[in-house]
Length: 112
Image (cartoon, rainbow, N blue to C red):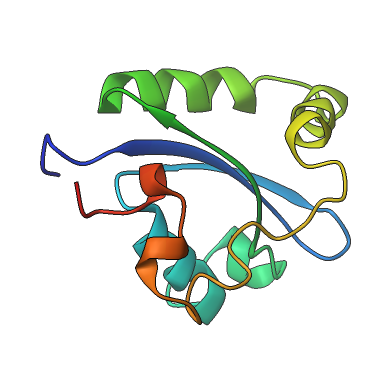
């Protein structure tokens, strides 16, 4: 991982609202992997590929600590976090792969 990249904690949801908490240094690449089912595991098995919440962190240690914190929460607390920023549970990455990268939120892009 390059130190000049961002680090992200994110929550994914399936259509039936199964939740997954993850961390990555490249949110766009990771979302592409989730969408294309590139890797085996929980998100592929349960079709969890809708980005419903994410935040940028200053470094990898902060991202991992935040991920662990969120993973320890109850489902209700995770739902409150999502609904505070995204009340409609919209897929925040719905058009990331269909539009120019300039329209993707800056903190999620790797063009700093």
